[in-house]
Length: 443
Image 1 (spheres, rainbow, N blue to C red):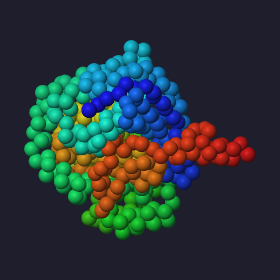
Image 2: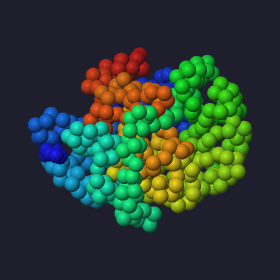
Image 3: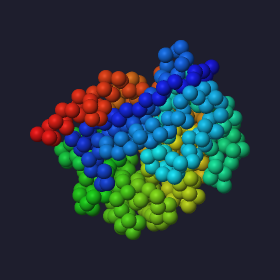
Image 4: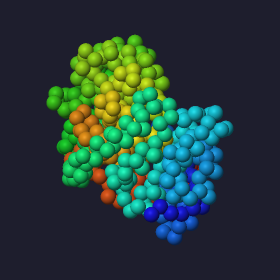
């Protein structure tokens, strides 16, 4: 029973100085500090439950997203949680259609990141009240209710409400068996932790060797800054993992379209499964050109971590511009929008391989991809979810990886709740960690 009037919404700027060790570094983002706008929603219900939501950032700019969350708060405060989830499509449409805030979106940028944080918190609270992990809440939900959570505006030419309902109905066949399979074996993952662009060769070798010992079979390498260095690093990793294991490369938007093709022709000898974000994430037709050019080489295009919304994903699918679709649980408008993208990908026959890592992204997106397998795609072919082994210790319910697979969370909620001690220490700029670092910079 969903209950409670929303009495308080708070948001905090939480940052981790990961740039000091080169964690997360790539060709475009050379010094990321993994960070989040962290939202907590409270109600007047007597259950003591809180909804926790995050949206992922890279340090500077988190304060902008915090401001956007505060600007959206009036849509949530004093609303009844039951009324919100009872007409979740209407609420989603309301919060993304604010007549004035929409101008600095619409449904993109800082406002949409803030929307994701707020909605992630609402989904977390809903799942906690139902006593289920989010993936289980979704799997058990009646298809009509699931469809009622999605906004089909702008995508009805690619996916109608009726089609979505029929897909979800069909997905119920065999779902119990697939759920049992997930609980026993987990969802396959790949690692990005071995080959950040800022790591020295010794670190690459050490991390790759350790990952092989731990049973990892899929590895992603950051590329795009220097061709000869990319060739050397890809050869190093390929030689270590051998010819049978899977290699992917990621340029993080570094190249122009012709440059992407030329560069990947040179890296084709290392048999990458995909090139990720080869050019601007907004360039739908550019991705299509790259996809067509690389198809004879057996290299697919993957993108989506900075794809703003369902409309862009619709166009990427319609233009045959990608072979692997990468949803991000904080870039899109939370579960509501992610559901519609999962269904579009299924209709177009494109495997979903989510973006994760960062701060809390693994914790969130595991729920979506497990739901996708159980209730939508029913397939693991060419599917895997990214994993990065940073900062999980700061979450109350961290991810569990066994045999290079995500094991389905069993705690109620969206796995978004952070430890209060970690939030206090890393709150910017007044947390103990940042006081010490900023004082050192002044000296």
